[in-house]
Image (cartoon, rainbow, N blue to C red; front, side, top):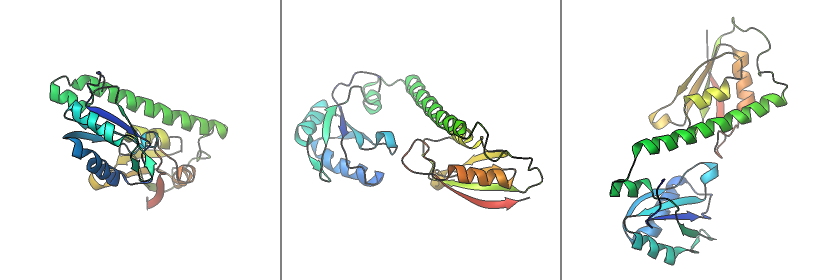
Length: 224
């Protein structure tokens, strides 16, 4: 959304946060669709963006009417705040022919890079707190059986590189396999020794990977 917003897109905040993403999307559509055709509704699950949403109308006058009628509306006993978004949405850009896939991909890459840098900084801080020693790196474990950890509650935005950053500080990391389809929020992390896997579970149980949802780690496999 690089270009100036022509008035089609509303920025909504102060939304009730203790609601599922699906229920929020349905509620927003029910509230706003009476004012005109909606091209898109954007609401993220991440901790940083929760309580916020963007509503994209086909016509600026419909967005104006919705803003006038719903600004301050008590949604789940919280008055929502509505303003016009500062930039044009991708949905509007596609409609008027100004959509630039290259620029969109550049923005996505910048967000991924910033996210990875944030995770790396958090891990570095933790490592410095334990004296710079990678947990689980006490001694050689070549003769120990391999262990696989099931990781659950992974943000959909996460990728293999992000998980490698998180788990590589524990000795013996061999492989990270991302889930897909209905298991997109899971991954399998394999270590070549039991001690490293156990240290990873102990050190990262409940770790929040740029989201408000803590990861759940379980050792599910011990194979020679």
